[in-house]
Image (tube, rainbow, N blue to C red; front, side, top):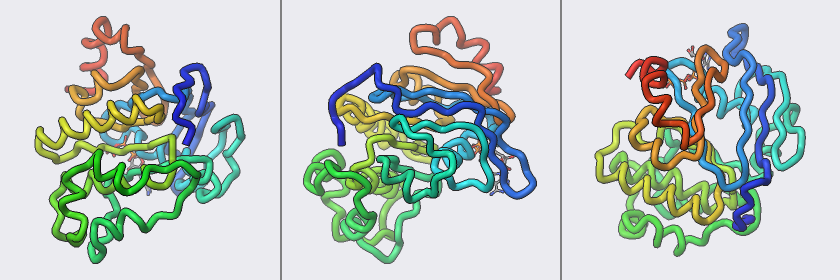
Length: 240
Ligand SMILES: Nc1ncnc2c1ncn2[C@@H]1O[C@H](COP(=O)(O)OP(=O)(O)OP(=O)(O)O)[C@@H](O)[C@H]1O
Protein backbone atom coordinates (compact mmCIF):
# COMPACT_ATOMS: atom_id res chain seq x y z
CA UNK A 1 0.00 0.00 0.00
CA UNK A 2 1.12 3.54 -0.67
CA UNK A 3 0.58 5.07 2.71
CA UNK A 4 2.04 8.48 1.94
CA UNK A 5 -0.64 11.10 1.91
CA UNK A 6 -0.79 12.54 -1.59
CA UNK A 7 -3.77 14.86 -1.58
CA UNK A 8 -3.29 16.00 -5.16
CA UNK A 9 -3.04 12.58 -6.71
CA UNK A 10 -6.31 11.79 -8.45
CA UNK A 11 -6.90 8.14 -7.66
CA UNK A 12 -10.31 7.72 -9.24
CA UNK A 13 -12.04 9.71 -11.95
CA UNK A 14 -15.45 8.60 -13.15
CA UNK A 15 -16.96 10.38 -16.16
CA UNK A 16 -20.38 9.94 -17.71
CA UNK A 17 -20.79 6.47 -16.24
CA UNK A 18 -23.89 4.60 -17.37
CA UNK A 19 -24.71 1.18 -15.97
CA UNK A 20 -27.40 -1.34 -16.71
CA UNK A 21 -28.90 -4.41 -15.08
CA UNK A 22 -30.27 -6.28 -18.06
CA UNK A 23 -32.61 -3.86 -19.80
CA UNK A 24 -32.79 -1.53 -16.78
CA UNK A 25 -30.74 1.62 -17.25
CA UNK A 26 -29.73 2.51 -13.67
CA UNK A 27 -26.85 5.01 -13.85
CA UNK A 28 -27.35 7.94 -16.22
CA UNK A 29 -23.97 9.63 -16.40
CA UNK A 30 -22.25 9.63 -13.00
CA UNK A 31 -19.29 12.02 -12.66
CA UNK A 32 -17.00 11.97 -9.66
CA UNK A 33 -13.37 12.39 -8.68
CA UNK A 34 -11.59 11.13 -5.61
CA UNK A 35 -8.05 12.08 -4.66
CA UNK A 36 -5.79 9.72 -2.77
CA UNK A 37 -6.37 10.02 0.96
CA UNK A 38 -9.80 11.59 0.57
CA UNK A 39 -12.98 10.30 2.13
CA UNK A 40 -16.05 11.09 0.06
CA UNK A 41 -19.61 10.01 0.58
CA UNK A 42 -22.35 9.06 -1.84
CA UNK A 43 -25.62 10.32 -0.41
CA UNK A 44 -29.10 9.89 -1.81
CA UNK A 45 -32.49 8.36 -1.25
CA UNK A 46 -33.16 4.63 -1.48
CA UNK A 47 -32.82 3.46 -5.06
CA UNK A 48 -30.87 6.54 -6.20
CA UNK A 49 -28.01 4.42 -7.52
CA UNK A 50 -25.36 4.61 -4.79
CA UNK A 51 -24.72 0.87 -4.49
CA UNK A 52 -24.85 0.53 -8.26
CA UNK A 53 -22.14 3.21 -8.55
CA UNK A 54 -19.81 1.20 -6.30
CA UNK A 55 -20.61 -1.99 -8.18
CA UNK A 56 -20.11 -0.33 -11.56
CA UNK A 57 -16.67 0.95 -10.54
CA UNK A 58 -15.75 -2.67 -9.82
CA UNK A 59 -17.35 -4.05 -12.97
CA UNK A 60 -20.05 -5.92 -11.03
CA UNK A 61 -23.07 -4.55 -12.88
CA UNK A 62 -24.16 -5.62 -16.34
CA UNK A 63 -23.16 -3.42 -19.26
CA UNK A 64 -21.54 -0.09 -18.41
CA UNK A 65 -20.28 2.76 -20.54
CA UNK A 66 -18.32 5.93 -19.89
CA UNK A 67 -14.84 6.38 -18.50
CA UNK A 68 -13.37 5.17 -15.24
CA UNK A 69 -9.77 6.07 -14.61
CA UNK A 70 -8.18 4.37 -11.61
CA UNK A 71 -4.56 5.17 -10.74
CA UNK A 72 -4.34 6.68 -14.23
CA UNK A 73 -5.58 3.57 -16.06
CA UNK A 74 -8.77 3.39 -18.06
CA UNK A 75 -10.54 0.37 -16.52
CA UNK A 76 -14.00 0.53 -18.07
CA UNK A 77 -13.49 -2.67 -20.06
CA UNK A 78 -11.62 -4.56 -17.35
CA UNK A 79 -12.92 -7.64 -15.51
CA UNK A 80 -13.51 -7.28 -11.78
CA UNK A 81 -10.49 -9.28 -10.64
CA UNK A 82 -8.11 -7.02 -12.58
CA UNK A 83 -9.75 -3.92 -11.13
CA UNK A 84 -9.44 -5.36 -7.62
CA UNK A 85 -5.73 -5.88 -8.20
CA UNK A 86 -5.29 -2.14 -8.66
CA UNK A 87 -6.03 -1.97 -4.93
CA UNK A 88 -9.81 -1.76 -4.63
CA UNK A 89 -11.54 -3.28 -1.61
CA UNK A 90 -15.32 -3.63 -1.56
CA UNK A 91 -17.39 -4.02 1.57
CA UNK A 92 -20.92 -4.84 0.34
CA UNK A 93 -24.01 -4.05 2.35
CA UNK A 94 -24.64 -7.75 2.98
CA UNK A 95 -21.08 -8.13 4.38
CA UNK A 96 -20.47 -11.61 3.00
CA UNK A 97 -19.05 -13.26 6.11
CA UNK A 98 -18.64 -17.03 5.73
CA UNK A 99 -20.81 -18.46 8.50
CA UNK A 100 -18.98 -21.75 8.89
CA UNK A 101 -15.51 -20.20 9.13
CA UNK A 102 -13.93 -18.60 12.17
CA UNK A 103 -13.10 -14.91 12.40
CA UNK A 104 -9.47 -15.63 11.62
CA UNK A 105 -10.30 -17.93 8.71
CA UNK A 106 -12.57 -15.26 7.26
CA UNK A 107 -9.78 -12.76 7.71
CA UNK A 108 -7.19 -14.89 5.97
CA UNK A 109 -9.40 -16.07 3.12
CA UNK A 110 -9.30 -13.25 0.53
CA UNK A 111 -6.15 -13.19 -1.55
CA UNK A 112 -3.88 -10.15 -1.43
CA UNK A 113 -4.51 -7.73 -4.28
CA UNK A 114 -1.42 -5.63 -3.60
CA UNK A 115 1.58 -5.79 -1.34
CA UNK A 116 1.60 -3.82 1.88
CA UNK A 117 -1.71 -4.97 3.35
CA UNK A 118 -2.16 -4.84 7.11
CA UNK A 119 -0.89 -7.78 9.11
CA UNK A 120 -3.25 -9.81 11.25
CA UNK A 121 -1.88 -8.39 14.50
CA UNK A 122 -2.18 -4.83 13.18
CA UNK A 123 -5.79 -5.57 12.30
CA UNK A 124 -6.48 -7.02 15.75
CA UNK A 125 -4.99 -3.88 17.30
CA UNK A 126 -7.44 -1.80 15.26
CA UNK A 127 -10.37 -4.15 16.03
CA UNK A 128 -9.81 -5.57 19.55
CA UNK A 129 -13.26 -7.23 19.51
CA UNK A 130 -12.12 -9.38 16.60
CA UNK A 131 -8.98 -10.39 18.46
CA UNK A 132 -11.12 -11.66 21.34
CA UNK A 133 -13.37 -13.52 18.91
CA UNK A 134 -10.70 -14.84 16.57
CA UNK A 135 -11.74 -18.48 17.06
CA UNK A 136 -15.51 -17.81 16.94
CA UNK A 137 -17.57 -18.93 13.99
CA UNK A 138 -19.04 -16.36 11.63
CA UNK A 139 -22.55 -17.35 12.68
CA UNK A 140 -21.85 -16.45 16.30
CA UNK A 141 -20.82 -12.86 15.63
CA UNK A 142 -23.00 -9.86 16.35
CA UNK A 143 -23.90 -7.53 13.49
CA UNK A 144 -21.23 -5.10 14.63
CA UNK A 145 -18.57 -7.80 14.78
CA UNK A 146 -19.53 -9.00 11.32
CA UNK A 147 -19.22 -5.47 9.99
CA UNK A 148 -15.79 -5.04 11.57
CA UNK A 149 -14.70 -8.36 10.11
CA UNK A 150 -15.94 -7.37 6.65
CA UNK A 151 -13.84 -4.21 6.83
CA UNK A 152 -10.84 -5.89 8.42
CA UNK A 153 -10.81 -8.48 5.68
CA UNK A 154 -10.27 -5.94 2.90
CA UNK A 155 -7.54 -4.15 4.85
CA UNK A 156 -5.50 -7.34 4.87
CA UNK A 157 -5.61 -7.60 1.08
CA UNK A 158 -3.59 -4.43 0.54
CA UNK A 159 -6.47 -2.50 -1.02
CA UNK A 160 -5.99 1.24 -0.61
CA UNK A 161 -9.26 2.40 -2.18
CA UNK A 162 -12.12 1.22 0.01
CA UNK A 163 -15.69 1.12 -1.28
CA UNK A 164 -17.89 0.84 1.80
CA UNK A 165 -21.64 0.33 1.52
CA UNK A 166 -23.85 1.30 4.46
CA UNK A 167 -21.44 0.08 7.10
CA UNK A 168 -23.39 1.55 10.00
CA UNK A 169 -26.80 0.15 9.01
CA UNK A 170 -28.62 -1.41 11.93
CA UNK A 171 -25.70 -1.13 14.35
CA UNK A 172 -25.72 0.12 17.94
CA UNK A 173 -24.39 3.66 18.56
CA UNK A 174 -21.31 2.37 20.36
CA UNK A 175 -20.32 0.29 17.32
CA UNK A 176 -21.07 3.18 14.96
CA UNK A 177 -18.74 5.33 17.04
CA UNK A 178 -16.03 2.66 16.82
CA UNK A 179 -16.41 2.51 13.04
CA UNK A 180 -15.99 6.28 12.93
CA UNK A 181 -12.73 5.96 14.86
CA UNK A 182 -11.55 3.26 12.46
CA UNK A 183 -12.30 5.43 9.43
CA UNK A 184 -10.47 8.35 11.01
CA UNK A 185 -7.45 6.09 11.62
CA UNK A 186 -7.56 4.74 8.06
CA UNK A 187 -7.72 8.24 6.64
CA UNK A 188 -4.68 9.19 8.71
CA UNK A 189 -2.86 6.23 7.16
CA UNK A 190 -3.62 7.57 3.68
CA UNK A 191 -6.45 5.26 2.61
CA UNK A 192 -8.97 6.57 0.12
CA UNK A 193 -12.59 5.86 0.99
CA UNK A 194 -15.90 6.08 -0.83
CA UNK A 195 -18.66 5.70 1.70
CA UNK A 196 -22.29 5.05 0.84
CA UNK A 197 -24.14 6.17 3.92
CA UNK A 198 -27.68 6.89 5.08
CA UNK A 199 -26.47 8.02 8.51
CA UNK A 200 -25.53 11.56 7.64
CA UNK A 201 -24.61 12.45 11.23
CA UNK A 202 -22.01 9.69 11.10
CA UNK A 203 -20.64 10.66 7.70
CA UNK A 204 -20.57 14.46 7.96
CA UNK A 205 -17.62 14.87 10.34
CA UNK A 206 -15.55 12.23 8.52
CA UNK A 207 -16.00 13.32 4.92
CA UNK A 208 -13.98 15.74 2.83
CA UNK A 209 -16.74 15.94 0.24
CA UNK A 210 -20.21 14.63 -0.44
CA UNK A 211 -21.75 13.62 -3.74
CA UNK A 212 -25.54 13.66 -3.82
CA UNK A 213 -27.03 11.13 -6.22
CA UNK A 214 -30.55 11.20 -7.62
CA UNK A 215 -31.95 8.95 -10.33
CA UNK A 216 -28.52 7.70 -11.32
CA UNK A 217 -26.86 11.12 -11.62
CA UNK A 218 -24.75 13.32 -9.38
CA UNK A 219 -26.93 16.33 -8.66
CA UNK A 220 -24.71 18.09 -6.14
CA UNK A 221 -21.16 18.04 -4.86
CA UNK A 222 -20.60 19.57 -1.44
CA UNK A 223 -17.20 20.22 0.11
CA UNK A 224 -16.94 19.98 3.87
CA UNK A 225 -16.53 23.74 4.24
CA UNK A 226 -19.69 24.42 2.21
CA UNK A 227 -21.83 21.99 4.19
CA UNK A 228 -23.34 24.39 6.77
CA UNK A 229 -24.80 26.58 4.02
CA UNK A 230 -26.21 23.59 2.16
CA UNK A 231 -27.91 21.73 4.99
CA UNK A 232 -31.44 22.82 4.15
CA UNK A 233 -31.09 21.88 0.49
CA UNK A 234 -29.52 18.58 1.49
CA UNK A 235 -32.32 17.71 3.89
CA UNK A 236 -34.83 18.38 1.14
CA UNK A 237 -32.95 16.23 -1.34
CA UNK A 238 -32.46 13.35 1.08
CA UNK A 239 -35.93 13.61 2.52
CA UNK A 240 -34.69 13.54 6.11
N1 LIG B 1 -29.55 -6.61 -9.65
C1 LIG B 1 -30.42 -5.68 -10.04
N2 LIG B 1 -31.24 -5.87 -11.10
C2 LIG B 1 -32.12 -4.92 -11.51
N3 LIG B 1 -32.26 -3.72 -10.91
C3 LIG B 1 -31.48 -3.47 -9.84
C4 LIG B 1 -30.53 -4.42 -9.35
N4 LIG B 1 -29.91 -3.87 -8.28
C5 LIG B 1 -30.45 -2.64 -8.12
N5 LIG B 1 -31.39 -2.40 -9.05
C6 LIG B 1 -32.18 -1.16 -9.17
O1 LIG B 1 -31.29 -0.08 -9.39
C7 LIG B 1 -31.75 1.08 -8.73
C8 LIG B 1 -30.63 1.65 -7.90
O2 LIG B 1 -30.36 0.75 -6.84
P1 LIG B 1 -29.15 0.95 -5.82
O3 LIG B 1 -29.09 -0.26 -4.95
O4 LIG B 1 -27.95 1.36 -6.55
O5 LIG B 1 -29.69 2.18 -4.99
P2 LIG B 1 -29.08 2.84 -3.69
O6 LIG B 1 -28.99 4.30 -3.96
O7 LIG B 1 -27.86 2.14 -3.26
O8 LIG B 1 -30.25 2.63 -2.67
P3 LIG B 1 -30.40 1.65 -1.40
O9 LIG B 1 -30.07 2.47 -0.24
O10 LIG B 1 -31.85 1.30 -1.48
O11 LIG B 1 -29.49 0.48 -1.63
C9 LIG B 1 -33.00 0.69 -7.98
O12 LIG B 1 -34.11 1.09 -8.72
C10 LIG B 1 -32.91 -0.81 -7.90
O13 LIG B 1 -34.18 -1.38 -7.88
